[in-house]
Length: 289
Ligand code: FAD
Image (cartoon, rainbow, N blue to C red; front, side):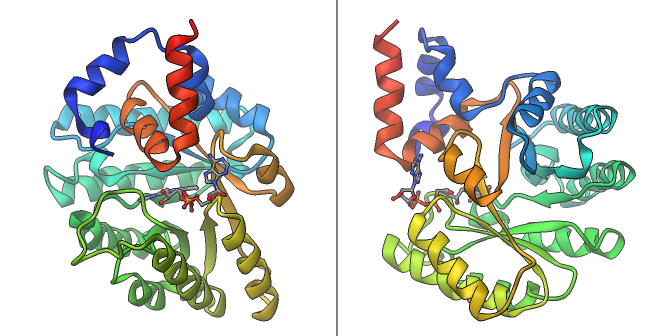
């Protein structure tokens, strides 16, 4: 996890003779065309993420907005927009500079998504941004009630956030959480994180919103299936990351989170940190050229 924010390691990996396979297993490519092509090939519902985060530069935030507008145009032109929504990190559109800039930029993306007949989900980042992201969500939902948000079961606060958001019209993606967080804000024991995931899933399934269960965990996927039957809830979906458990994605008809763009480094490092098998795959590719 530390490597995802370490400049020296970033330089090493970016300049290493890394094989294309490693990056393309988890990232659809660097361009809009490669993202559109991945959507075509997958033939599943998707949510697309233009990679980039922690922008402290207005011009970079603008570049991110333009990338999303170009993507939405391209999806619309390819008649793929109905099943392809976008995921946006507010830090990539200026949240660290000014919350109102992030709100304005996210609004531009939502307006374009509406024109294409699709939706937007706000990714959730580290805990210092949670309140701000939920404030921006509330503002956006005044105009676009379909804007979705992500809640992380490792945060102590999340059960309450689920209760507040499990309302008609709301779309909530439930994840375990991908950032290294301190014990005063986040549960540290992975088993307890799973138990909280189930508690949160119960609240979302019992509510009137549209839950999106984003996990690759086979036990949680089984439990969600059972609980959905118990609550007689049919309006929900599974979501998984591009390149992870593709057979299971097809079996479940899951929505696939498809990242693309030049700034793939931080994202790739988080995927490697999550699973030792991924690191082995990555290291092998470095020595097998
Ligand atoms: P883990 O605890 O990582 O794994 C549990 C089990 O799942 C493993 O034991 C294994 O059986 C199976 N599994 C996991 N990975 C693999 C693999 N590569 N191959 C085979 N089996 C595997 N996090 C955020 O903080 N903010 C976000 O906005 C966000 N958005 C996300 C969107 C989507 C669609 C998804 C799927 C994840 C998102 N995440 C986000 C990441 C999330 O928080 C987790 O870090 C990530 O999903 C890994 O957790 P897991 O639930 O898959 O379970």
